[in-house]
Length: 67
Image (cartoon, rainbow, N blue to C red; front, side, top):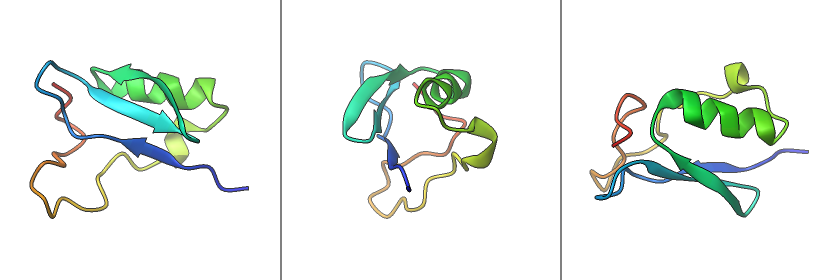
């Protein structure tokens, strides 16, 4: 079963909203926050590439930008 994880672009108030399987486990302020959300969801953080698949709208920002 494939699970869907979506990391939203950085918000103006700081952090990125993370969606996992339709729920929102929280807002990640650092890569380690995102990795913890993955662990809590039963996923292996080492198996997930945090690099955005697309940044065509210019708001994607890379995995080093969280706030």
